[in-house]
Length: 242
Image (cartoon, rainbow, N blue to C red; front, top):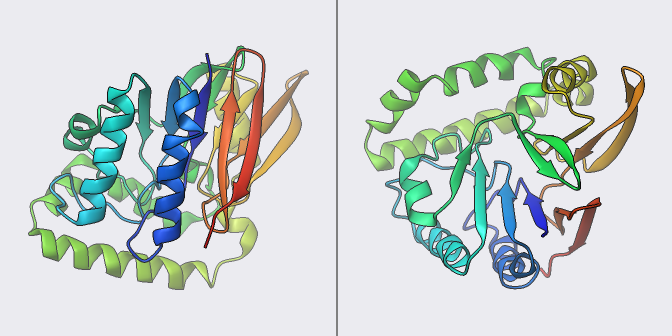
């Protein structure tokens, strides 16, 4: 039994090479695994399950084919696709996961997160996150016409890019004390997340025991995933053909 974990593909029509790399991943690497976990920011933006954009429909169809072939699919919201809902789950066969969630991987219990909630030093973003995850706020946004939602998403992306360019690098990374708090609260020695686009394996001591935080990379020049079976967890990458 093996599982794969990915995040931060930021699928978008402007990045066709990444989309094709993901389709190849589904046909090749993921076909050999029993389960695929997607830890958010799978899409550059998700404006609602009623989105009829060609890429949205095509990706959902590819995921449904993967599930129909006998694989399990789990999806966790990111800061780009927090509006993914039951419609997407029904179309693809995915099970939506809470953030955080503890699962069994590599012979141990592992905490899965998108990772944005760990960046507590970025107070401006944390305030927006609290608003964006509010069901009433989301419902208000989803009640707007589709084209208006697309325009709002584009504006939010532009604002985020502009604001991030002015922030210190350490502010946009995770807060170690928050990492340790959540790991202790959930009784795990391994945490896996994405979001920061800083792929690495961080080893540290939690209590009196060794612990690690594994960070997935974003898909750009490289594709990234974690491979897990009954005895190991490996962070791997491969070139994306441009």
